[in-house]
Image (tube, rainbow, N blue to C red; front, side):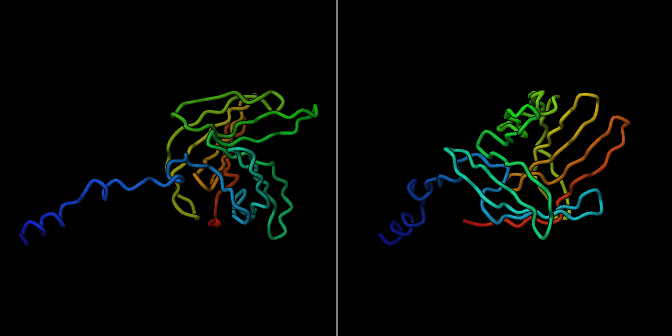
Length: 192
C-alpha cells in the first residue's frame, strides 16, 4: 500500500501540467513601450547624445497613443506613435493640413512583407525583414528590420525591438554613403 501511494504522489496529474496561460502572454508583442517614464538614450551621428522619455500614454480601444518628449534638456520634437497589436504607426501632420496614417511597422510580419508610404508623408515603400539579432551598447535585441526606400533613391533602415521601439537607424544617401544616425546606448523600462 505504501509503495502504491508513493507512485501516485510521484506521477504528475494533467491538472498540474496544464496551468492556465496568463492573458498578457497570449497578447502579441508590442514594439514600443507603453508606460510613462520609459526612457531611451541614443547616440546620434556618432557624437551627440539624445535622451527621450515617454511623457504620456492615452489608451484608445486596443491602441496606445504614446507621446515622447526630450529629456535632460533635449529639445527634439517627436511625433506621437500609435502602438497596437497591428504594429506601429504615426499620424503625420502633412503640408496640406491633412493627417496620414504612416505605418512604421506592421505585425505580425513575414520577412519581405512591404507596404506603401503615403505621398503626403514622403512616399516610397517600407519592407520588413527578420527577425534579426542586433548588438548595441544597450544590449542584444531580436528585431524587425524595416527598410524605407524613398523616392529618389535614398533609404532609411530602422530596427525595432519588442517593448523598446527603434534601437538603431541607418541612413543611406543617393550617393551610396551610409551613416548610423541613431544607436541605442541605454533603455530604461517601467514595470506595471
